[in-house]
Image 1: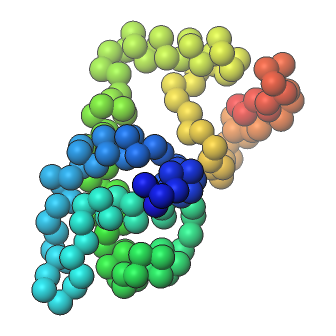
Image 2 (image 1 turned 180 degrees about the horizontal axis):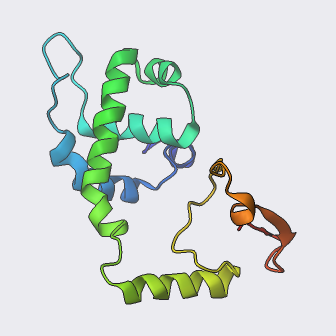
Image 3 (image 1 turned 45 degrees about the vertical axis):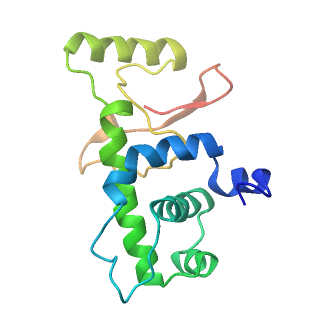
Length: 159
């Protein structure tokens, strides 16, 4: 698919071939050999392991569907997803998810979020996710959602 139909490749994997290769080079040593690589199971290359994982994460298909797409057993797909996600985390978390080490940096982040989104006392956000937050018992009005627009793209402000 990378050579014959790069557009479909991009839609399925959600990244270019170059970006895929870059990520593969970072995680390849971590996924090259694992406990499920035995003579009784099919040999799965690191590139295929990454493609299985990215396809699963990008499409939201079930593991059964992914196993049919790649002609792998469901339990093999499950192991590949677990190992590859862990490898991605291990290889990239210190690069892209490093937490600030000083109080001043946390305050700078909070001020940036407040100036951009008009949300005070916030030090981070999870984009595109719905998170159910249940107020503790007897919390009164300490936990509430104000759904009035903030003036920035009419996004609701959650307090």
